[in-house]
Length: 97
Image (cartoon, rainbow, N blue to C red):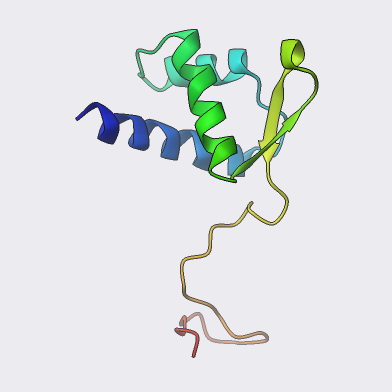
């Protein structure tokens, strides 16, 4: 259960980071969690950022005592396996071949 909760929490954080391409610190992550109803500590926020970085979603910026994270270039848009042909007047999506 705790692992599923952690995955859901990190997924919500990752989606927020994709919407806001600014630098995310541990403090900002903790404020985001508190605003969205996650009851976590600063250590959990720090570990979540580390897990996302090790998974290849984030890039670490700055020294260890002023660490910030940003979405890895090219990872801002998740790839769902569906694509819209370019150019297209249709909104219908097509599965790549």
